[in-house]
Image (cartoon, rainbow, N blue to C red; front, top):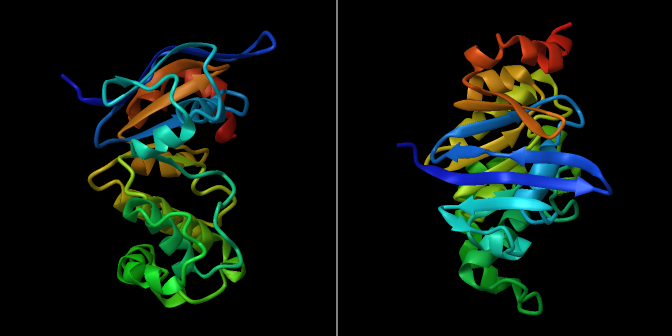
Length: 250
């Protein structure tokens, strides 16, 4: 029997009569990379917002590790190990990559929010921060200003800061959006590397990335599941070709 780290049961979200997510029964298997795909307006980002409690479900249940977390707050979800990245890179542009990762490392050590203390108390985190930067190819850029980094490097830094929070489940929202082919390849490799010993649920439009990474794919249309399975299966489904992949390959 499969071990599901995340499940939703009849999860729905309505906005003034419009159903953005409709009776979603999603199962994400532990240790897998699971991709959500679908055309614009299919409900992918709304689902992420529901899972991380930026939105409250209209109806339905969210289970994480078998525990009902439907009514928990965003901070509680993060403390459980569900960590999300966003479409727009969410790093501090005026800090260095080292400082960005070091800030992320503060939460597990219990030194969060102690900004009035000397940064000397944070230097004990430098070794781990440098390890994380090295893991995403940014060791040589650790002391540069983050805002001056190339876009692909900023996204790599976001992966490093996400890993610093020691996620059990990583939610990646369009990790390769807006990238050239070379950066897409680098980020794809980083996501694969980051999947070791953790589960990843990702929203991604680049079907080559999905095909190379995802163990399982859920195709969405109008807030509901249209098809599920491995890439070889869903890519041949006539409903999927009509709703999404056909247009993507025109």
